[in-house]
Image 1: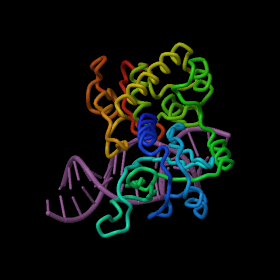
Image 2: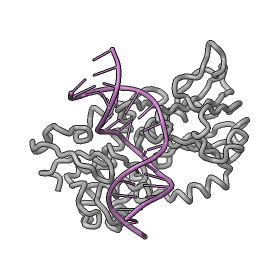
Image 3: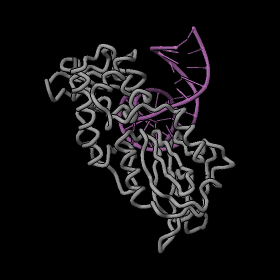
Length: 277
DNA sequence: CCGGTCACCTGAGTGC
DNA sequence: TGCACTCAGGTGACCG
């Protein structure tokens, strides 16, 4: 899924389309998709109006007027889309739809669907207090877009492990995944396999600047649509700007040497072994 | 405590 | 065509 730019796009789309509406009904067609207390899931949501939809790392959070919230993590293939309330012959459950939220408050009722082909994603509903505790236990690191270079250097260089692995550790910095880690390391000419603890302050400053620039450009283009990701209002196009991710077998556009593919932290990684130091 | 591996799932692509 | 196999944006549980 969805890394930071895709989660940001989805949250913005949702905020634009459903903020102010009321959740009148809730249906779940695949029980495991709800990872908070199943008995309180629908009761916490029904009758509440959605005040705002935002993002925390790769998580999407819808704040309700009661102080409760709906949290979603899309993992690899989760997404939201709008449709018609399911259950009739003319309106069956759409393919791979796992939950449905009936939204009232506009001229015509709408249904917000959560779809997830691989069923890795999870939905949670929390009261105000339980939400605070859950987010606290998650211990997400700061958002890279709101981070300064000194703090970034301190966070990254204090960790053991390879640079790419540390960048993808959500407790260090929240929001980077396989695509944007590979792209950022390539843009900063830094090798994904070097020890994170060896990052100099100057290299950290450059890396953070590249991360921010890439994430902002990707948000501008509604994220990267690889596989089946798309926002509520359509797919993204940042995949056309990828320089390293998915370019295994091609030559480095900076120095012309062939890209190398390696498994780092269990993830397929592409980098230039010559110009990424 | 740590890093490495696998499990969770389905579908798309590839090669025989 | 069809089948077997690999791979995919992310975590979280397990294991040595």
